[in-house]
Length: 119
Length: 119
DNA sequence: CTTGATTCTGACATCAGTGTCAGGTTCTAG
DNA sequence: CTAGAACCTGACACTGATGTCAGAATCAAG
Image (tube, each protein chain N blue to C red):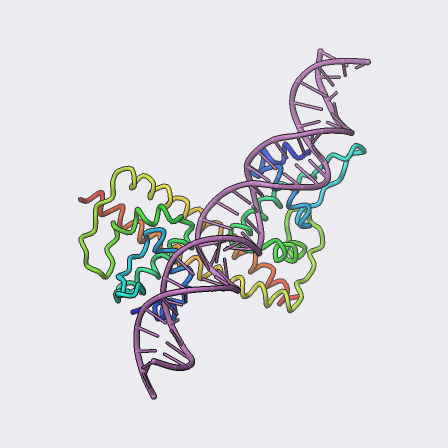
């Protein structure tokens, strides 16, 4: 599929999809004329990328991580190097802290919302 | 206490504390010479502010939210307006989605980490 | 071939919080 | 009084993903 369709199906802008390619997160074949042609598996990958971005990982980390992931493409997933595993473990801890933060903030919002409903 | 101590105790830079003041998130008395003098309750407030920032709320939302929060200062917490409640409810939903995203990303990391440990 | 939709590249802008530096003032301990 | 630490304001830079625009090329359908 081409970039417009991928954007539509993932909800990610064409701009971002091109950016992902430049960051080596997302590969695309090219038509003779130079237009990007994406495999069907790109849809899942883009969604994964978005999730990881939302989790606060930067492009570089995601780029390292992706080849170690088992996604739909069935490709042989590389094993993560010890260095990468250490990084990812740190990221995991950061995500845990982030979740704890979010839960607290959600409680804060709930308090205010409930107080308003009550008052 | 003064800004340096508050920064030390909260782990937030002086720069950010001054920024919070400009955003009307954090008030401070002033010494005759113009130095900021913070109440003890500022510590908790700064931590709350950080959590809310981490949860993706912008300064404006936090500024609206703070007077409706019951924090240590025992001040009379304003009731949130219906408009604000609607906003906060939307933010709450966003936070829920964010948490779900984070859980998925954490699972992704776990898969890679485990695969490396296994392989 | 023509036309309109889609895509291409590249450059510049934005956001929002934070870092950092400069030059000056205030505070506090000796 | 004085020296050094702490603080003040204001300005500029940065980050990193994304928006947006311009001008040109490609694609698909009539």
